[in-house]
Length: 256
Ligand SMILES: C[S@@+](CC[C@H](N)C(=O)[O-])C[C@H]1O[C@@H](n2cnc3c(N)ncnc32)[C@H](O)[C@@H]1O
Image 1 (cartoon, rainbow, N blue to C red):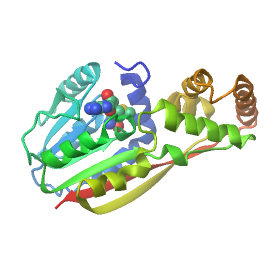
Image 2: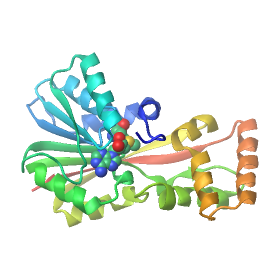
Image 3: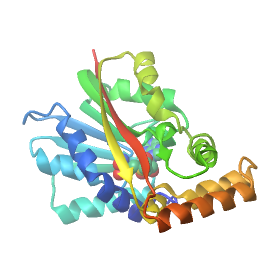
Image 4: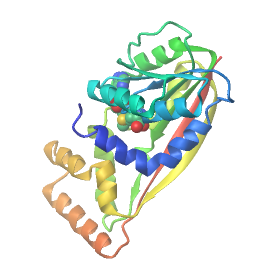
């Protein structure tokens, strides 16, 4: 399992963005009818289980590349006594499903970690039924804003996160292009803002120490800049005025 993005981490993020998860579920074209739903990069299974519980006529399948998270998903589904959800260990680049299997394919905060987006988009298009919906939920990391005195260091830290920490840190800005290249049409976009006013919560979710370590290692950040960042964070925290804003974006499209 990835030490940074483990089961406990996913539970913390779920708590913080649960209202957005809920809205993303409600945006899916479900209308009480039986649907075959695929959740790509399902993590510990939270969304797949929620969707299955709320839509008893639907069959939900979650896949993830992480073996421990798939085990956690299977355990969580058993605890929920939900029988219309199943989980499989699989890379989204090569999925073990027939063509035209799913009415809905959903992927939340997964594209930012992908190494080969064209392969995944090709698979999404293949397994989606004609007329089916794909829903991609992404954190807009390049648009994150952090209020500290030295904004140039905040900008550098955001850039390190997008360029060096995440495999595909600009994913939120590229989904429209991915859809266009994959013949996904009739695109809808919904944006949900987030604000964090406590640094300990922000760094639990965004892992600034890790970003700074990587910046220092690859020499995109100096020790001096790190110290200014820490002083700035100390100042805004002591004055109770830390604030960080970012958006979560939901792109939905149709395979015509
Ligand atoms: C930030 S987590 C999000 C988990 C879940 N979607 C959620 O919103 O709680 C990203 C997930 O994508 C999975 N993942 C990354 N690359 C993948 C791939 N190529 N195929 C399948 N899953 C992948 C990771 O293992 C991880 O569980």
